[in-house]
Amino acid sequence: ARTDVAYFGAGPAPLPTSVLEKGAAAFVNYENSGLGLAEISHRSSTATRILDETKKALISLLNIPDNYEILFLHGGGSGEFSAVVFNMVAVWVEKRRRRAQKEFGDNDEAILLRVKEELNYSLRLDYLVTGSWSLKASQEAAQLLEPLGRNFVNVALDAREANGGKFGTIPPEDTWKLTPADANAGCGSAFVYYCDNETVDGVEFPSFPKSLQPQAGEDERLVVADMSSNFLSRQVDISRFALVFCGAQKNIGITDLTLAIVRKDLLTTMPSPSFLHKVGVWSPPTILNWSVISKNNSLYNTMPIFSIWIAGEVMRRLLASYGDSKVAGQEAVSNAKAETIYRVLDANPEVYQPVNHKSVRSRMNICFRVKDAATEEEFLEGAETRMLQGLKGHRSVGGIRASNYNAVPMANVQKLAEYLSDFARANS
Ligand code: PMP
Image (cartoon, rainbow, N blue to C red; front, top):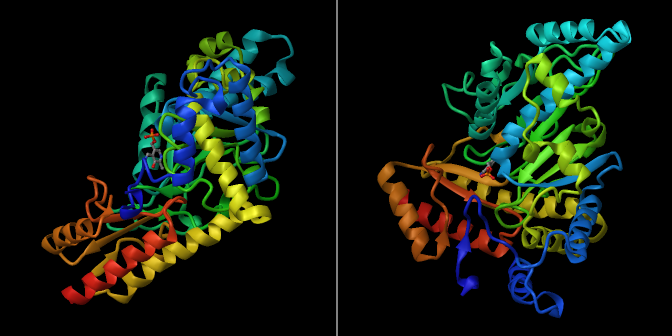
């Protein structure tokens, strides 16, 4: 039975049983219509209603301001690694084009020359690399832009450098090498990118980085954040971001759905494809083009309506559980669950070594080592006999990883804490 298993997988991850049961019925026969949700047209009024209701729940949960648009997308978090580059570089080009137009009026040739020059000399994409996923995103940007002739990616922070070649800390902000913000053209770099919670390495930003807020005399920085693995686990002030994105398969729902919350003015700061081509930059592939997706209410092509409905159910359940406190209610529970596990780990340092610096320990992906390789194997085997599953660390880093997503119940966390205690007693 489901209740026998305590699953701590990193994603896909557990979903609330009540949502799955309701989903199983809706998969076969949605609201007695005689059709299942994976069978209906994405152009039907039912589909539009499901989309609208899911958006409404998300807006309410996170108090998303009016000047933001919610997009449902394909391609997972990885798809957004590419989409961010295509869309944000296009926005950067359009801002420069508009500025040049103010200076040169209808002299298209002068405008084009100016933008080309600026692209060659000043385009930068800033990445804060704090773990495997932000590293991947920065590498994707570098390889997409390589044919343009130079390295546009500024790794403003490689957290491994200060930590013996390993991820696990977030060095102080005054050591980051951000592209200086520029007071004329919107921002010095096209964007600053970071991953709020690194799923593989278990590194989570404790809060929004101060140095990404505009200082006196500076223009804003356009901040892009990957929240794939901690979305809806704590409050977020969306107004600080140009874009927040996440794959659904951890805290929101099932795979094959990606969510983005994007500031609306970026959607209208898109140059024409022909201008981009003249400058020497690709226009975004249509399926990754946020502006096109938004104009089509996320129904540019066939969307997985069932997945969007599941996401809506998960969100409505959070709203029902936590009432007016909304995500703050979930945040308190997430924190309490993470503390329960870290407390046992910290109390048994001769057996367990949490891998990360205390100040950046993830509340979602709790990563630790057990004494030595043989004991680690024993630990995993013992966990299996208690039906504690999904605890093996990512293949790239090894060790143990307990993922503590929203739908992991406190009771399962307590079962794990008990096992951690028992195992420590037997092995110290
Ligand atoms: N970002 C983060 C933080 C992730 O954890 C993952 C996947 N685990 C991804 C991006 C990639 O997501 P996807 O598999 O949906 O492409």
